[in-house]
Every structure is written in C-alpha cells, then in structure tokens.
Image (cartoon, rainbow, N blue to C red):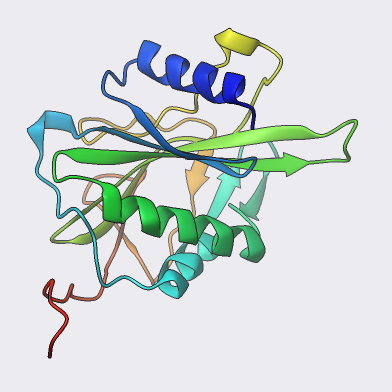
Length: 198
C-alpha cells in the first residue's frame, strides 16, 4: 500500500471517530491501528506469552454468516490467518494498557480486473478473561475508488452492539460476552513473568 493510501486511511480513521489512532501496520490483507481504550478501561497490555500458532488457529477458525455472500464462510484462508497472526502478535506487544487495537481485515474475491474487496472491522484487546474481539462490521464491500472519502471498517464497541454485515457463528472454542453476539472472548494461556531466568 502506498504512503498516500496509508495517510488517507489514517486520516479517515481519525476523522470518523478514533481521535488517538496510530497506524501500526498496513498491507493488502490488513490494517492495524492503536486507538484509545473506551471508558478509560485498563487492558492487560502489552501482551507476552502468546504463540503465533494459537492466534493463527483463532483467525482461521472464525466462521460468519456473510450478508454479502448470503452464505456461511470462513473469515479468511488458513494462509492469511498465519500472516495476520504474526502482525497481531507484534502489535499486542506494542499496545499500552490504555489502548485497544482496531483491526481491519480484507477479503478479496474475483480476478485482478473484476476483483472486489470486503472488509471486517474488529476492536481487539486483552484482559483477565482473555483475548476480546468486538466486531463492528462483517465482510462488507469496500469501495477503494473513493479516495479520501474511503471509510475504514468500524470496530465494535464495549458500550453497545453495532454489528453490520452478518453474524458470527458460535463454536465451542470461544464464548460470547454475556448478552452480546458481536463480542468473542478467546481464553489465552497465563502470561509468564517478564524475566528470562527460571
């Protein structure tokens, strides 16, 4: 992604409500931003002791009912899940306790000429319950030709359900936050103390 596109994406995120957004990573697969945690929440950041394979399995296993496809699909391929896990893991190590991650995932359909991109927006943070993913938008057509007017897929909120574009399929390897169908909680292994010697 060009510097101009990155600048436009960052501007759009700030303009549409994330006042302290900072871009951590950008590619054709994903954009990762740090944003201020809602409600002055204190998260368990930075995150250590989480392996890449656990995160890759998580992202590869998320299934959704996509309104765009009118079908049940996996959010991403296994290969893309591995690539995404690397960057999410690095970003979790950079986040402060007063920051959440705004994760945008892109899914491309079709050939090079007729291809379309669909975007998913997720608020990500870690607390005592585990890895939290709050979805704001699922698999929605991304209009990349609008330039500066291009909107970033919105993340979900702790305060209310804002999910658009489909629904998340429940599974036995995660749980939903009580009363929420947009908020996944994935248990993580206990984090080791920040020291080298046993």
